[in-house]
Image (cartoon, rainbow, N blue to C red; front, top):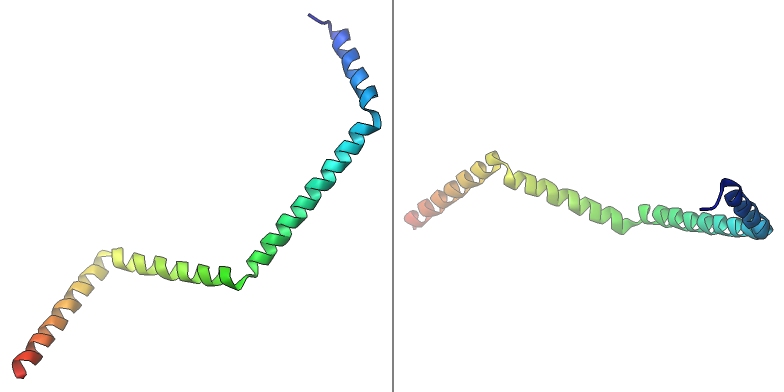
Length: 97
């Protein structure tokens, strides 16, 4: 089992070996991450301004509203009554002719 001093020496040696290379690698990856973040934000902004996205969102909201109405019990009763009334009116028109 290595002693604490031995572990400390390994750490110091790694830092000496790494030297400027570690800092250069760190800078390189920080720049890469910065570029990717910039590209992602730019793409999100572009998509946010997209007309297609706005159209899709509008249609999605309309569809959700329509489904809510269809699933509400009051709307189901209204449609059933309207169907009966329409059928009755057709029957009355047929009996006139």
